[in-house]
Length: 478
Image 1 (tube, rainbow, N blue to C red):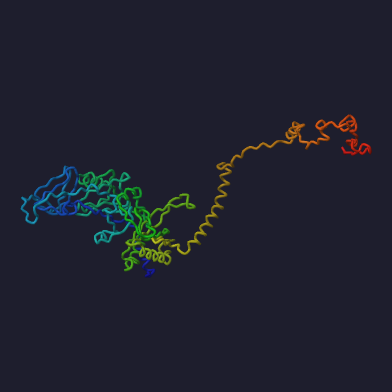
Image 2: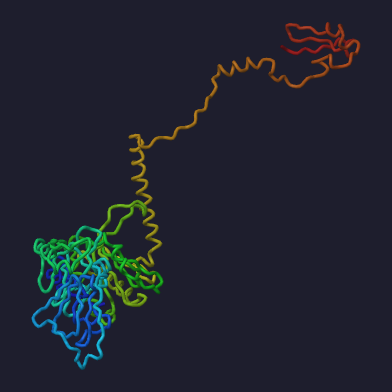
């Protein structure tokens, strides 16, 4: 990778101060001499009949004199005739025109301001003239609020400026070589007959927006019309392993995206020029399309809770293929950031490529462990005190437990008294407990047996009839 002396770095930072607005030029026109404006693909000649749609409004710029056999005009329209422009009627005797046809001027009603394919962007007027155009994501291919809009001198147009907002703000608008940067002056032009034919829709362009004063770049301001912009774009199928979706773009791309975090000393235009001179001039990177802009990226706490959006610099790299050349350039940009980032106001950078590679390859597992540990500590340090505060303030309450009645000691005693004779005394002895259950045997359950049982202070005394002769007795202590 080529090295740049520190002197060049300092000089670059001095030459490019605040971020400058870009120039966005409208491509289509409604010029008479433009053969693409005619249904036959050629400009009408002397033997032809020229026809404009009767109910369509149109403003046509006529640069030279044209001969026609007949012309059918719209109800509301105009010809802008500079010096040397005009028409003449032919009697059909133009030998180089053929038999003559009816040539229809194409309808310009379908051309929309928010169609990215209808604009060209450059850093300067000189770049516009020399065809050094910039690549941008779709949202920024359309004029941003800080851009200068140009409709080519020597041309007219018709554009639908319908927007999702009441107005379409830009810094300035140039029409027929005249630049409008004053709001009152441009409003007056929009109210003129030419203005009403050239601009139409539910919204109107407005000028006078202050330039971007932030050296790190400013938000384009077209996110409110993202769906309208993407509605005009047709996305091609991607063949790469992992297509990328840049912020502000309408389609997946094959290539690489570099994301840069910056400090207050970062200068967007200076860094754009650095990359163009340092890398895009190399033969290996001449096929690269580079788009750079400041974008707002949504942040999520713990990957779930949305936080305030953070500004970062997005660099989109496309190589027209599956992305290997763009990935190589992304790696070279990161090496340059590691070597010179502190001098450029860059605090960090990372990339992702459509091959699936990222700047974290080879360290992903360790990074995951570190991130998990950090989040774990955050949960403990922040979560527990937060729960304590919410509990003390009554925001969080302990769940109510179901009531379980525990009987008191007195109720237990009362229950035992109520049970009474139902208390279990064990099993019944058919010999001693219920004499009536046994057959009557003389001498056992008679009167003598009853008299042989007595209570004494020492216990229960009875005479066993089997051993009555020996008067054997058994005492059971009370």
